[in-house]
Length: 135
Image 1 (cartoon, rainbow, N blue to C red):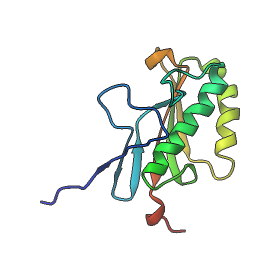
Image 2 (tube, rainbow, N blue to C red):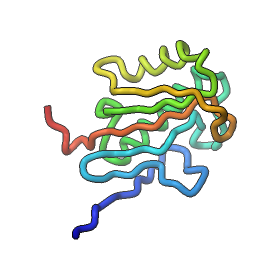
Image 3 (cartoon, rainbow, N blue to C red):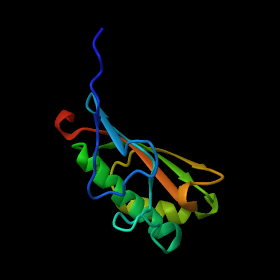
């Protein structure tokens, strides 16, 4: 029996993990990210400005984690969005659409009771590694 190779990702431009987990893992041509918050990587604080600002920063952080694994937002196949308040869905969706303009990935969006750091939103993704992608 062979062991599956996995690489733990370190993303210098993304916030450090706030617990015992990896920001991302690359294995068998895919990158799996942890949930990403709208945290400023320099201060480790949430970006002020509410759901739109947090969504934008979470997606920037997500892009940086994906890049560290040889992928990008363009190669995301699935996201899961966790929101504290689904009444803000339209605001989140507008910002999300700025990042996924063409052929967006599959997505699930769920409301949760609470998120770390009292965040409004958390986003995780699965993406294809660029070198393994072919049309």
